[in-house]
Amino acid sequence: MGSNQWLTFDATAYTAGPESTGKSPGDADYGITASGRHVRENHTIACPKSIALDTRMEIEGLGVRTCDDRGGAITDGRLDIYFEDVADAREFGRRTVRARIIEN
Image 1 (spheres, rainbow, N blue to C red):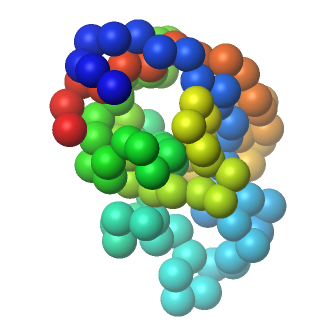
Image 2: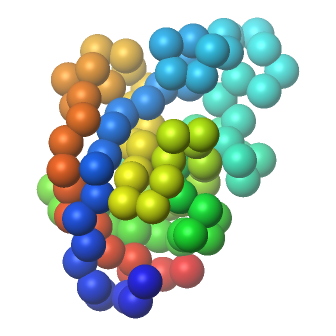
């Protein structure tokens, strides 16, 4: 996947909580991403394994996010965008987005 090439992704929203991860505050790995860092709103996305961790992507209408996480359902053509608030994640829901790699 080349830099500056806009691609279409099926994007969903997720949170650190039990509704998305099955984990609760107080669990040892609550909010910890596949990269070992804590999730951060307006920063963290879960990407398919075909996109390296630490890759920065520009998501049209949302800005720049970093591939810090993975997910069992996140396969090629899919992204999962982290939201701190459950209501915000539900409002985002599932939608088609355009994104491009800006750094990896």
